[in-house]
Image: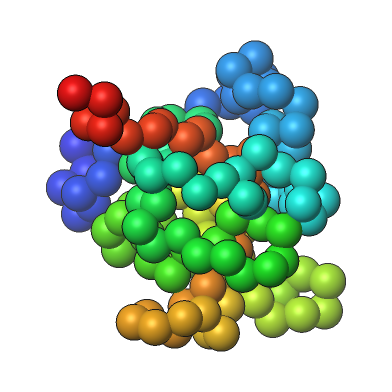
Length: 142
Ligand SMILES: [Zn+2]
């Protein structure tokens, strides 16, 4: 199988495989479209510099330089690392119209994006800590 129409190597695993790899909360959020409670996640208040990767497949998703304090209790970014890193999808659940943000590689549910973010993009990527794995920058201790 060789699908040349997409640049991204998709990662497809069964529910059982994801369950084995993830904690129950990570599984619930990323594979069952859950949302962690505000101010309970690992990263909403993380101010260290580094890279946020997908908890499921390790794809780089967000950089700390685009993280901002949104006051929501979830890690918030005004842009992904690259536009290709995330996939956006219309989400009409709960009688609301929102845009869901997924990992482009493994379809992990990451959170939602809202049009009320800061400059320069005006976007607010409202993510779940449970969907992310933070990798601190290493070059600071030379
Ligand atoms: Zn992923």
